[in-house]
Length: 77
Image 1 (cartoon, rainbow, N blue to C red):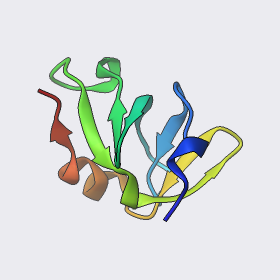
Image 2: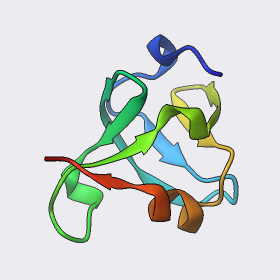
Image 3: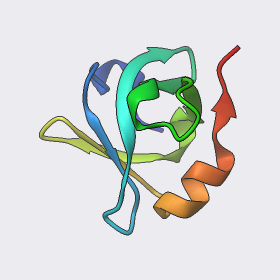
């Protein structure tokens, strides 16, 4: 598992297929909170940090394709 401290605010989150998933708002425990500006419902969403394959050059790359990662998103309450 990736060290969550390597995930920085405003980093792009990219699926394994290279498609943009969102932008990091901040890391909350074992979840990554995404900014709401990329959201279709103008709300924050979370994805599990366990989906992160690597963090390189300020980009968070996931082990899942974007459509799968988005399917795992949780609404922020």
